[in-house]
Image 1: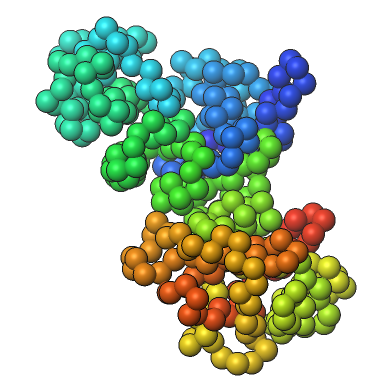
Image 2: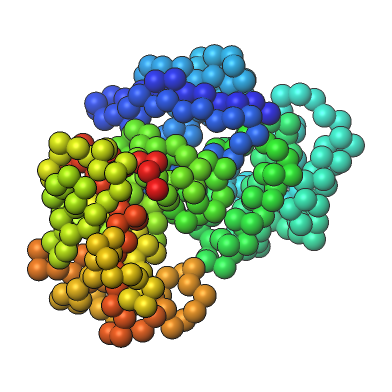
Length: 369
């Protein structure tokens, strides 16, 4: 197993399109690093340049401290699992798993059989070793692709949206399987997904990409609590963070519907700035029964209920609760949790506010709870 490091990696195509714009990223030996971002953010391209499937325009890629930029995919000794599984349709499951063992280092028949069956047992494929890919379910095909990747003694494992073709139930099961398998093997892993909930569940750390640049690298908890900028704040979280225009005067933030006193530390971070964007996560909105009536809290008016029928969040345990979306007359939407639509007054806690620069998008209060 090795650490992976990208130093100022740039990837520009012949038509002038820049897919990777100065990527700097370090993945520790044995770490499960997830790359997440919207379509076109550069996630899969980054994975492919690490694998050596695409050349980079400038920068360096290091594997275990050695510069591997000019090495071939074979020399890098990395295993990659594709979204499409890439199984050989004319070969059995056994032969698909054994295929990479027949090239490079020479294994005898007994060694191949031992390695294939060990991978098969780990991924519960023993009953289907004689079957062809056409007769397998999506989950079974993905497990075969995983077994083929892990059967070799590779330095790192690269997974490019491996669960996107599976249904919701199978995705949940495979997430658990991949997490368990990675921890059992201790293999350095780079995992690409566009699903932020999947990223937050699987990653030791998560790298958020947008337009070919790394916006933030942090643990899932830190991404949620301390987003670096407006993009990360809006991308991470379900429902996403709500944003409101605001004016700050001293230690007072004036919102469209109320004003709130912020802490001395937060006030110091935004000193001299009048215009701000305030962000708050829906789960930090409190019910009237829980809120105190002082200037640390502000009542959120119902306004014009643009998307009123509250749709339930996937992670809510009580079906009676959900998320109420309230739109103000300036078309800014605010989201908060409600127990029963129409009967709860929502209050915003000043301690939960994130204050962003409206020009740069930077979180001016990052790290301040």
